[in-house]
Image (cartoon, rainbow, N blue to C red; front, top):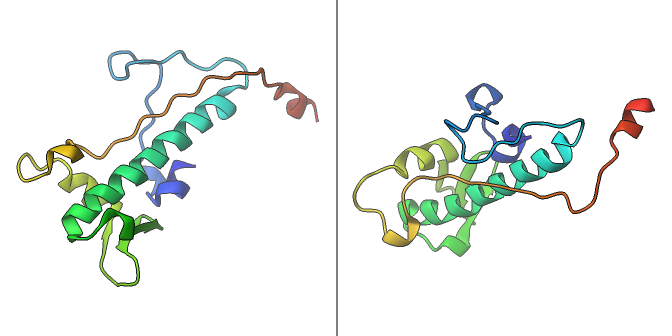
Length: 127
């Protein structure tokens, strides 16, 4: 899903969960709620990467963030052929000097979802 949403090859994605040496929160997977809760959290994190990436891209491409679009792993100034791939934006987001303070450092996203209602995916398993 992340590969599709961010246009990143699947072999470049590393999933870490339930390892508190590497992630702040990780409760593991329980039954089949993983896709409902985990998939929604991945979507939220991907959306955050895209939104933060637009701000970084605007800075690097010297454009207004409102003019930046994202598709197929690339940030583009709308109506032009000026573009930067997500991977390049991510690398450049770690530059130690010259970034505006409001951007912070590092292109990253986090997502957390709480299931307000139970899901019953076991019914799908039965079918």
